Image (tube, rainbow, N blue to C red):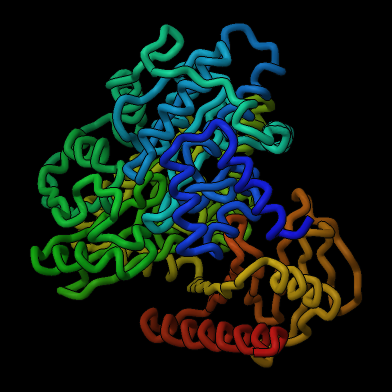
Length: 576
């Protein structure tokens, strides 16, 4: 059945089925005013990916709404019931987005209707708190209603398992299977109200337990004295405001200014329409505060406060630090100040800077690469809980995701914000900035510079063809440099192009290609896991340093040449 006929069939099912009148009226309105949009709303079902759902809000099977969110909750319940656990429970959190609170309540009502205990946060909270709460309350699973840094018209549904990490195989695939079996809202069990013995409303219990755990850490168990650090903070209308300012104050930082324009829990994201701490548009207001107030550091989070962005003030000029730069500064500090063990280890994604590996090598600790997705970093922690092969020190992704503790099993902007503030304070007391620390790291290990960009597609078909063609006819040169190795993470093979020898890549199969060049530069290409977008990462390095500033410029010129070259080659392959 083609998409149009399938959409018509589903539209009729919704018009005739157990759906509310407002929804039916919206369908009728779109029939008259925007039939193309209506067809898109019903042409397919929501994609329940390995971490959950992220989609536009609206009516229909291809949008996130009270019916599709209930079906997602029912799928989780169906899988939990099959686990035959005694007295299972699920904890549910939500952010500031449109319908987040409503969707969280619907999830609680579905869970309780399936005779499973539901812990429902009374108010919005950061994602890391939900991961923590899952472990603290010994739940079998957790749900976080969020679309992270997506625009205002989106929301999402993230699922965590009992270890507090996002669901991994076999649980993710099995939950998806259960979701795909739900063909009608009549398959969903749901209560009329959250006022039910199996639904417990969480107020401050998890906050208190989390804060106690944070300040029991060696890093934060002593209040910082005599600090003059001036901090600007933005929650970008999101959940970070509920924890981060109070934790910074508890650590000893008093001079904190909140970016007022982005402080309210505004689901419209009026003053941060693209609430991503990687995006200049979202940072502009906070940067104005930073320079006007002559502050030292501007800390920002995405709306669910699992990612952290940093901008610093260098003599009245802004310097935006990349995720790779922040990770390098953090790891270097942790290695210098922590009591390292033989088994200490750092975990990073395959697209995160190799500088972390160099730092670990100096301190004789392991740096382990995993696939992109913070759940794979946390999977290593879970493995080490069982086999004690390593002791987790630090985890990082270049997209501003950091973790320095194990009582949370997802990236955590709360503890990351505390750590970077502590490092900035330590630097200031030595008349240095975070940029000075980064340059010190470059002087020791070499300069590593990274960049990335994306190609957006209308749908994934062209992207699939491009990846197929890159495998069939791989690039031999990029920017006049020879490709020495091709790492194909899909086939799990690393191919030496000099002698055609092959080595196994010991990671799960993933649709990623990495081209390693003869000057040690790298280009990595992978499709996005959440949208029809091809992500391309470039990294280059310069090890023989004579003048930091000049050598950084040379390295950046080389990086830009690499990026321009790969853009041109991809455009040629696409026929643009």
